[in-house]
Amino acid sequence: MKKKLSVLLEQFLSESNYNCLPGSLEKYYDAPLIRFADINDPLFAEYKTLIGDFHLTPKEAFREVYPEETIENGTVISMVFPISEYVRKSNRIKGQPSREWAWLRSYADEELLRQVSIAVTQYIENLGGKAVTPVLIPSFKKIRLPDGPVSNWSERHVAYVAGHGSFSLNDGFITERGIAVRFLSLVTDLVFEADTRTQKFHNENCLFCSKGTCGACIRRCPVGAITKEGHDKVKCAMFTYGDASRKLAVEYGGLSEYGAGCGLCQTAVPCEFKVP
Ligand code: B12
Ligand code: SF4
Ligand code: SF4
Image (cartoon, rainbow, N blue to C red; front, side, top):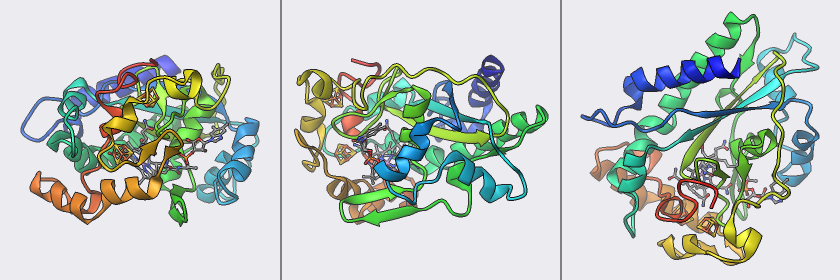
């Protein structure tokens, strides 16, 4: 099943116009990495404490769309979309994100992943199952907490359950294709064998967190949002999505509502392409 889904998404990304940069054949994303988590994995319940009571479990997300269905068993399909080398390279500059990175925010982050969600949902339905994309259900929300924004379905925490990798000093999640990636997940009532998690702790893949070395992302951040103590989400959010970022997105030919993003801590660092 995983192999077939991989082939389907690889083909989808190679053919979809949504995956092409404006006026170019260069791609936003490479073929995804796919892993499965058991909806009954105890970590999902632990996130109610670790993140907050508002964080949905897979069953809660599924029942919101299918309130009549009982879902005792099922799978969370967690997908990692590596950002193409073309876009990564463009963002190895300093001070502000590249035009290509801003286009990724405007034209691929939301709309392309929405198209992927439709394709995977159709695939699951053809197999006789049901699928829900938690970040697209009505109750999905971002919440402003004093130490920065969080959401009620954290893709990175889901990816951690599925064993895609780990968090890092700057909060970014390091996968086997590195930290310059995007995530999407779906919950289905079909049962597929869950992948095993090998991480011993939640930020193991980061050199600073595991060995006390590196710290390259600290120097990459233009606004000092990363220190040895971690990531200041408020400073980061102001820079990635604030007024100046929205203006820059428009100057680049992107959309104000998405901002230009940033991701300078995800490029020109040892974890950009791989687990360092
Ligand atoms: C809100 C948000 C933000 C906020 C806050 C980020 C944050 N750290 O939470 C702001 C605006 C700052 C932000 C910035 C960016 N974002 Co953002 N954002 C989100 C969003 C919508 C929700 C994140 C969320 O809910 N976090 C929940 C909180 C609790 O997570 P956390 O604080 O990081 O978690 C820490 C603790 O839980 C801790 N922890 C402590 N003990 C334990 C124990 C265990 C067992 C575990 C598992 C964890 C754990 O580990 C974590 C890391 O320190 C997601 C999309 C989504 N729905 O997931 C994208 C997302 C996280 N963003 C993403 C990206 C790409 C960016 C930017 C690069 C902007 C851009 N697009 O150019 C920057 C990068 C910032 C950075 N250094 O990571 C990607 C992640 C890519 C990656 N490799 O990690 C996501 C997943 C979007 C996507 N669909 O791919 N973002
Ligand atoms: S650049 Fe170094 S310190 Fe920063 S997240 Fe990557 S491995 Fe960790
Ligand atoms: S995304 Fe940009 S502003 Fe945010 S921590 Fe990384 S480098 Fe700093």
